[in-house]
Amino acid sequence: MTDQNLAIIVLAAGQGTRMKSALPKVLHPLAGAPIIAHVLATARALDADRVLAVVRHERDLVAAAVEAELPGTVIVDQDEVPGTGRAVEQAVATLPADFDGDVLVLNGDVPLLDADTLAGFLARHRDAGVAASVLSARFDDPTGYGRIVRDDAGAFDRIVEQKDASDAERLIDEVNAGVYAFGAAALRDRLAALTTANAQGEKYLTDLIELLRAAGSEVDAVPVSESWLVAGINDRAQLAETAARLNALIVRGWQLAGVTIEDPATTWIDLAVRIEPDATIRPGTQLKGATVVEAGAIVGPDTTLVDCEVGPRAEVKRTDGTLAVIGEGASVGPFSYLRPGTVLDADGKIGTFVETKNAHIGRGSKVPHLSYVGDTEVGEGSNIGAGSITANYDGVNKHRTQIGSHVRTGSHGVFVAPVRIGDGAYTGAGTVVRKDVPAGALAVNVAPQRNIEGWVLAHRPGTAAAEAAGEAGSGGTDAD
Ligand code: UD1
Ligand code: CA
Image (cartoon, rainbow, N blue to C red; front, side):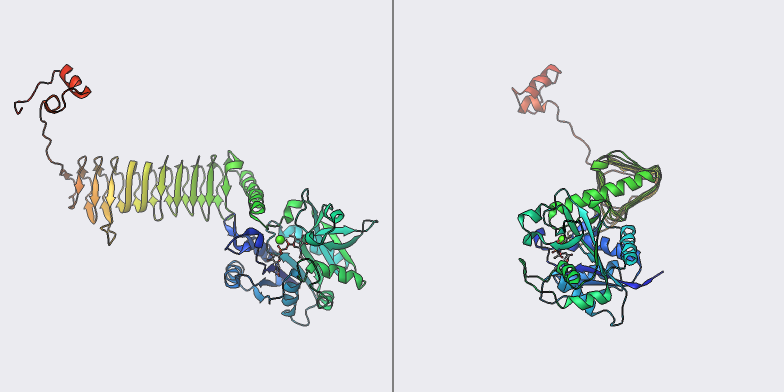
């Protein structure tokens, strides 16, 4: 049920300078979704009365991503005054004047924090009846984070930012996670007092904590159970660390759901992927986007699938695929390249060094070796010979090749589209099929072979070939 007394503010206006990127930091992908999408998914799970996202840097791009992930989020535009304090100030100004609940502030760059942890944090904040609560964590390497300064008795004193910290303060390993719960009234009351008098010339949200304490309000610093939950992403090294951590969680989740994952360290699975029990994922496999792997399928080793469907008991090895559908019991690879629109029906095969695109290959049909099959329809039970090419492009337009059921095409055939091969037809090796082939016909158009006897001895005397030919009893030709 919606929590009428809760508003969530997601901070996403910063430039993310340390990423050194043209792409806004919160839009960098993590397990197949922008960083901020993970934060918004958590906000959605908390079912707050309203969610606000503060944007500024590349605001249109960020706002569009927010709207896509959590429609109905209120977009708040931060002005030119920098800092997390200013961001919250402007978000709070858009809340109804009579809103007297709690305001939960989340950093758009802290993606692993889950709704259960936050619900516990909020419950504790409410039970304690304090003006503000700060989530904290202990890090082996606290560099870059704001430090939690406690007094001699261990009570929370204030937060000091890395850039403003003394040498002694920089040794503190308890950090501010960037997650806060505030009573709305206390927040409104103190926000106006924030200044930009600090090393970065920003309005720090962290200073608000000190202001609240100076005004006699109680503030609680609540340590999180596991520090990685609040890891922030400020640079690409932290992006990779966070991605690895999230991936390990995703992999373990699928293992516990009955999927064999042979090598978690080299298996990467996006958040939106679905895998059925008794599927096996072999080393070096990346499952991306909305890929689905059904029961008993074996994917990998060394396979990347983006938005693909792998049917029950299908096998896909050393393959790169995007938007392909692989049917039940079908076999793909090794070394196959499945481009968008590939549909391989049940028990079919796409084999070694085969590229397919917009190709429907019917039940039990096989393209086993060294072929390009594009803009093509193949019926059932057909076999496409080794080294076949569908010539689908005339330099201006793409055309379709239609191959019927139970067709046998010879090796090294070219199908100059548009062209149709009827059911049960054959083509000879090396045929360049330019005209339709009727059902049951054999198409051949390679010129009859002519052997010029003794040509090597006559024209390549003294070579190893000539010597071998001589030993084999080849004579000269009359033509000399
Ligand atoms: C912030 C905290 C720091 C804490 C760390 C936790 C402050 C001053 N510091 O530091 O104590 O340890 O998070 O991860 O709050 N943002 C805005 N508007 C701005 C500036 C930033 O919306 O003007 C957003 C950013 O987009 C980002 C978040 O606020 O999502 C945090 O900003 P960032 O610059 O990353 O702060 P940190 O230096 O990490
Ligand atoms: Ca940060």
